[in-house]
Structure formats: C-alpha cells, structure tokens
Image (tube, rainbow, N blue to C red; front, side, top):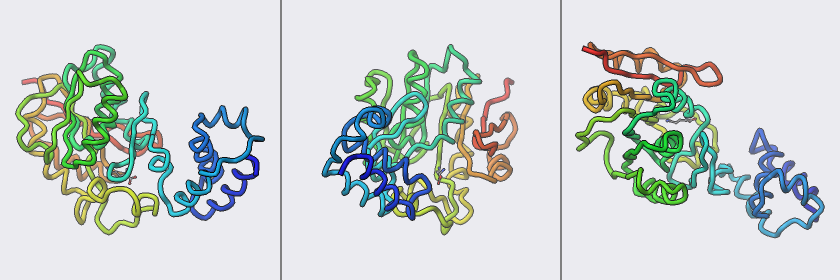
Length: 275
Ligand code: GLN
C-alpha cells in the first residue's frame, strides 16, 4: 500500500477516537518514516507505507496521545521529549510565558523557579527565551526528572537548568525573580477526555474535590520566595479565577490575571507591592 492509501485508511480507523483523525494519521506516518509532516506530504505520498505504521495507529486507537507515541511535543519555541508519567505541555500554558515576557521584556529575569516542572516545559521555554537566565525545576516525580534531564541535555541548557526532587516549596529558601507553576487543578472525579484520563498522570491533573488543594498548599509561601520586583505566574483552570484569587490575595501582594487565546482567564500574575 502507498502512503496516501495507508493514511486514508488510518484516518477512517481513528475517526471514532480523535477529532483530528486525518492529522493524527499524517503525524504518525511522518514519525514512522522519520521525516517532518510537510516533507512527507510534499515528497513521499506515493512511497510504500512502512510496516511500523499500523502499530502506531493501533496505539492511537487505544487513545494514546500523539505526543506519547512520537515522544515529542512543541511548546513555545522549543521541542520537549515527553512520555508516560509526565503531563504533555498545552498551548494554554504558553500564557504564563507570555505574561512573564510582558513583565520582564527582553532583559528577562535572572533567576527562575518552576514548581511542578514535569519534563521542564515552563522552565526550559523561559530559559530559551532569556539566554542569561538560570533556573531550578522542582518535581516530586522521578520520571519527570528523567525527561527533564533529557530535555536539558538536548537543548544544551546544562549550565543554566537544575532539577530538584521535592514536594512543591518544601526546603526552598532562595528568592526568585520569576516563579512559574502549572499545578494540578482538576476536580477529582471530573470526566476528562479518554486521551487524558487513560494516559496522563493523575498526579499532574487532580487536586482534590474542588481542584484547589495545591493552590491552598502554595498560597502561603509564594510571597517569601519572590525577589523584589519579581512575579509568580500561576496557571488556573477554566472558571477558577475568583476562587484562586481569593486564596492568594493578602496584604502586600498584587494580583492580575491574563487570558489564553480562547479568552479564558488562565494565569494569575502575583507580585509584591513595593513598600
Ligand atoms: N490543562 C490540563 C487539562 O487539559 C490540566 C492540567 C492541570 O491540571 N494543570 O486537563
């Protein structure tokens, strides 16, 4: 079978699983061939389909996310290695980087802390943005550490990025110009799409009955970890703005929110009021 027929058959096979079945089939085929999707579409559609393709389609039919099958996901200006055990970075989370760019401009922060860094998504995106910055990614997951180290090496960031195995802010003393954090915020028992529910780590998604457990944990500490003039950019779920705002609000602290491309309040920007 040629690529074009194999892709059409796979798109039909995946129509039940995915709202983007044709795109999925093309991405899997490009991965099986080891070329970029556009190169494949321009040059290879009449080539014979590789044997490995069917196995990849079956994995996708079992709702495995494309990013886990290909082992990669683009985020901001970088590409990250991802897989079982770490959250796949979402475009929504780029709102946090945009908020940081709006605050710091080209000069950038000198030091960055990423709480719940997973494969390093937010920290490594920020370090790629500001070549003079350095930072620390904290995560309690050993699997996250593995992906983080792989990504640091692939991006040549060994001198600027460190990992700490830890539970949120426990044991952290220093102050940071920029704190990034995409905590779990899904209500336990929430009905997530099967791609997420069956494959992505519960520990990166769920945060108690109201989805706010980790904000409660973090709120009392962020202030002391912020350097003067610094900000914390914290991701929130759809509809959580008021509740999370009231958890972080206290005297001496300023809070703004920033929306994602769908117009949903996605990021709280927390700063210290100058005395
Ligand atoms: N945004 C994720 C989702 O789509 C949730 C990630 C999180 O809880 N931080 O399910």
